[in-house]
Length: 462
Image 1 (tube, rainbow, N blue to C red):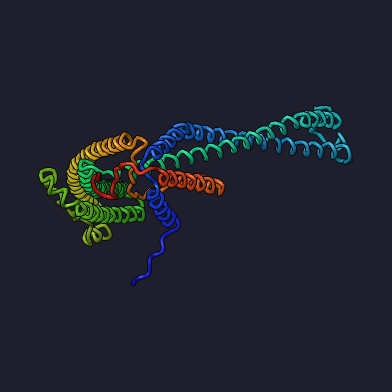
Image 2 (tube, helix red, strand yellow):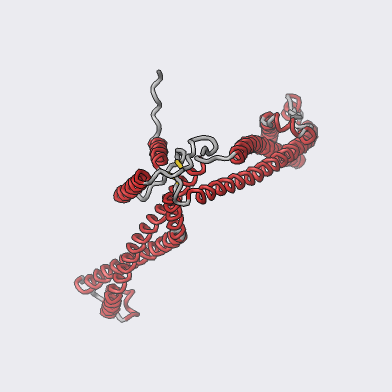
């Protein structure tokens, strides 16, 4: 036998929670006390609905106050730094023969000399010292506010966790009671929901594949644009070389321009080739199921053109090197004609790619519409399932009425963690144990009236 795989910590915790929920559901009886417990949980959870909004507001206030506290701290530190700086200036002017002599400090001549400078610095120092207590008290007040907001946020987090735990437990009791008394209508709705869920998953998978195909078409068009841009720059460079030839300019610059022109033409060929490769991959990723479902929209998808652009060969190079000014002119005109024809070819390729992209997008919109319809149908079925479950639950409530007892079928329900404090876990465990003990004791002490027992699976049996 192969060893049992080791699950991650979170998955193992969820599995253990489900096992505990199964054991707890087996010990509960669907009677009047069961519904009293369910109503109490729902009422307490309803009373804690404020916690989410209050927690969000408290956290926002905490961020604002924290920012203000940092600003206050910066102001206090700057005040202390200024005080130390002024004290050093005063000490230097009073005790240094160089800085304390007005004749040697020309920057103080028009401001009353060194003595006036010392007086000004002392006045500023006193002002800084006077403002220091208010800065310190403001910082301390903000720090205290931060601590208060942290405590408030922690309390609200506990309230949110408590509400989620209550909702989870109430939902588990609801599902446990409903699973113990299923109806044919509930079975039919559950089967329909599963089928529509699978259909929705298929539609979403088709849409995701078509989205990638559309992105590939857009990327191919971008590469064709890059190739056209390279050819346009090559045309400008070729015109510059021809203009240089007409003016009988530098031969070196002219040959440099001609070489750069040929490089740009080769770059355009590489970009066009890559565009064709990207477009081929994109169209191959179109799901055959989507194309078979919408043959009219998918008609023409898959046609890819791999352009072969004209390049300047050895003849053009020989004419430019050994043909003189006349050869340069003829070669330049031939190169310009090739560039213009290549631009026209690439423009056609870009248009064909745009048509492919439009067809893929039309197919994508059709699939998305089917996915939206499937999602809407699934939502209606899930609403019907919930309504049927509520009807079953209401029927059980009216049937049990504090007299009849119905055993609930075990349903695995993962309960949320109540807070992060171990005391919360101990308290929750104690409450659950006390509740189970009370229910078990009451069921054992009750007289055996005619009860309706519900099997773990199947319709109610009298």
